[in-house]
Length: 75
Image 1 (cartoon, one colour):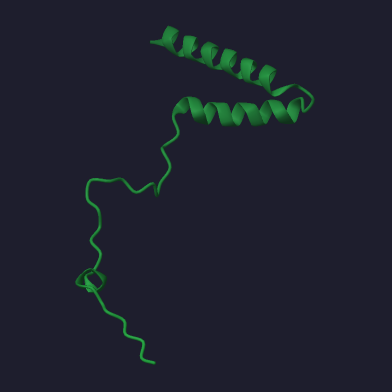
Image 2 (tube, helix red, strand yellow; image 1 turned 45 degrees about the vertical axis):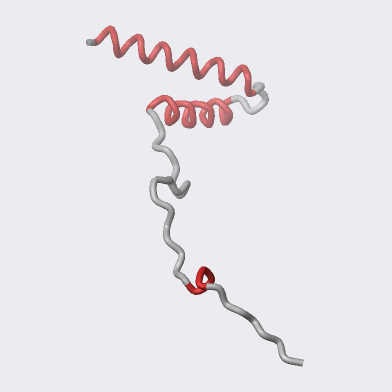
């Protein structure tokens, strides 16, 4: 019994990289707001671990808005 394997020309051809498509290899750069959120959420979690996340998030957004208002007042 002889096992014959026929190769098609497509099987031998090297694969080409698809052009025009992004490879999902990297992460987006964090915005100032994202960085602020990360640090403030962590800080509030350390200070008050029993506070619900929703309340912590509201405080951080309020702090962000106050910070932005101060920066705009300086300009």
